[in-house]
Image 1 (spheres, rainbow, N blue to C red):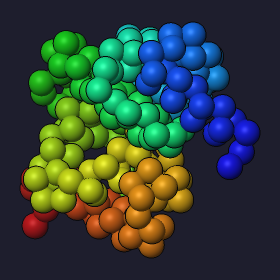
Image 2 (spheres, one colour):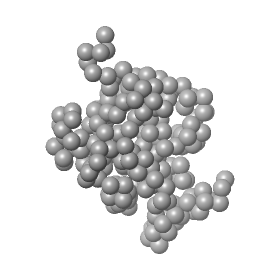
Image 3 (cartoon, rainbow, N blue to C red):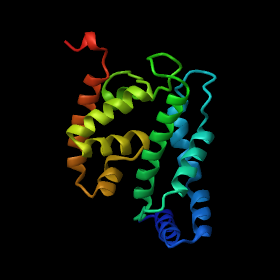
Length: 191
């Protein structure tokens, strides 16, 4: 395990035990990574978008420090929870912006050809709705998507977080991508 992973795991353990100073050290250690993840999504957004990477990370941080019942296991677990939290921040932001209709200023998530096999940038509300529908069929696939897309974890890191084999993650990832690709297509092109 790389030294940084040990430091993060130790700080998470101390934070869980109530050490606020450990939480603050943890934030300074992972802040740049979280900001890079946020920046990857928002770089592909329309010019002048009101949500910036720093604001996304800060809002996610405020929600993360409110987590009272989380028993942090390690760095990968932290980033998994951070990914889910960022997803919620993006959805809440899109709803506040009145983006109920496609193209109404909604935030889009850059799901490009490396994710779904085609250049698709669904707005976050459509993606959230599709992930909720997928979750009714296979909650594990949703976790795989969140970890791969929202946290930027590799197949191996995702396998570690979910305590599954990399081949299972690859299979779930392929199935989830195919399902989301179909679900996020306009209704008339699904025939």
